[in-house]
Image (cartoon, rainbow, N blue to C red):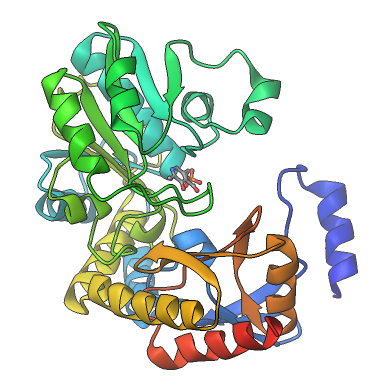
Length: 377
Ligand SMILES: Cc1ncc(COP(=O)(O)O)c(C=O)c1O
């Protein structure tokens, strides 16, 4: 089937929700994806920071085979051991006490919003300008982009936005009704916006002083992407609530809200599929491989190599670890040029976003750099 035929079927049957790149994939191995005509592409965005171990990692495949032949779903009426192993592991990694497992990132944010209201008995949640926290009605209320919000108004009341990377403005905006502040340690969807070095620790200090919960949305920055297991570890602080997803499943849908605040009571929150043994066992495998192979360190090393070389080629580049933005005239055009040359990346306006699998090595990085250099001539 060619791409035009594929586009026609999608147009006829699929909700009009995605502006897709004109390629259809059929398989993946490590750092590479293969399209339906078996053309190979170097994957520099990992399904939006998801395929942390690359494609079809043998340990993920083996876990799926093993667990799916044992037990895939029970609902949360029953205990399963993979779920228990995962929540213990998340507590150890984050230093936070409890976990609610979700199916994705937006559910992790919804969970955080409910926890914040329940714990504080207050209504207001403050988010930051340009933030992206998801598209369900709660998470959308904390997402900045007008185009995403407007057709669905009214959203959740008692939510507001303050300038990102401005702790003074944040302090001023807190009222008696503020339950929590939510922010991304690095704003991903906005084009990889990195705040000042002290921003997170200042926000932590303010939230403690004002007795307001700090929710960090590490759906995109978590699990090694920025060079530490979690981005908050660069600032030596700890949030009260941490939202996770994407890289946690390495391609399998799963998220989590890990927290150190008041807990729910049975019935106040839940989900049929959440924390099923298959998803939980895959996530545990992903965590084990990231930890054993020290992939956060690799993210730092290869990320610095990519950024140094791109800057050396005269490009305007910014990032932390393997969360890299390159400023270009037209993001879409550069991404299309990269695709022509067998490289997959994504863009936000005039920023090309690189979020490659954490298993990337110098050879892959140089393959990308050579192609980027050639299209930049
Ligand atoms: C920071 C952040 N939060 C939440 C989400 C929503 O996650 P999901 O698409 O898994 O629902 C995203 C997705 O891009 C994100 O980047």
